[in-house]
View (cartoon, rainbow, N blue to C red):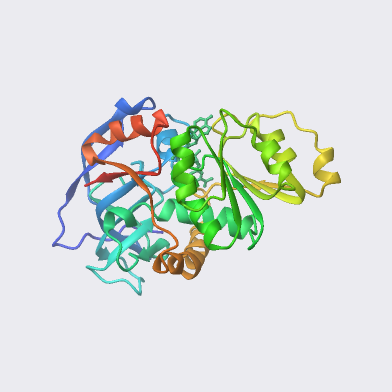
Length: 336
Ligand SMILES: NC(=O)c1ccc[n+]([C@@H]2O[C@H](COP(=O)([O-])OP(=O)(O)OC[C@H]3O[C@@H](n4cnc5c(N)ncnc54)[C@H](OP(=O)(O)O)[C@@H]3O)[C@@H](O)[C@H]2O)c1
């Protein structure tokens, strides 16, 4: 995106937003008034109704995940609302369209600008509260589980953090693809939620060893992991020959003691990615795939966001505190 354009006259000049006053705990999230950003070339301006809260927002708030160059410094990686203005060069979107979008940042605000190619129509029959929960998790899960991890029907798929926003989406997408889904989670209530979403077997990792359970199945073809740390060598053990491990976060830390001979001997693949720093073109390619493959799953009733709780924008600090308590099951959303 290039030079900022002018804001249409019917729009306000300022908006309510929540900013990160300084790196720290949830209390550093501070309500502020900011200028409404004019949509740049190739971008749309969204009047936000709901914004999704994601773990990376909490990392950014803590000073561990900086906004990429050119992105808003405000947190917020996904939102739903209606198109308030379109920038030069944009086709396919008109003012008033219902939209949900992946954002480079800035979702914790009444208006947010994002490349038009990262926006998707709100699925039929879905409200804006639910639609705000889709982009970050669907883009992350599809790009890592399918584009990178090549999950196929009939394969054994293990997702850690099964009750997280990412986990609840991964369980549903993998089930819709015809995979056999295994999920780990930290409480029996979380395990029940994973089963209700389509997991064949859920593992309360505080009581049972996921390696043992997966080995008894012949091993996982694909593991999606957000824990890292001590899970890294255990994931390798839980994979079958030719298995793939995809890392998307390191909640327990990025370091591990690993015998790489197993990777060679059993022809394993260890890979991973983060969504936010990828190029606009790469994200547009993911958006096209999500629209082509995930949106029909929603239309067919195979995927629906599981919402844990909602908070008013000004109470974003409480939303972050809930997320970091890990008591939630599914997604947390902010209402504008
Ligand atoms: N790579 C990417 O592009 C990308 C994009 C989006 C999100 N992510 C990452 O994916 C993960 C899930 O994101 P989300 O927004 O869905 O977050 P979330 O809902 O807060 O999920 C995190 C879950 O991980 C589980 N967990 C397991 N071990 C943990 C540990 N050691 N510390 C804390 N939690 C632990 C927790 O449930 P239990 O009770 O089961 O432990 C918790 O609910 C986050 O780590 C996030 O940073 C990566």
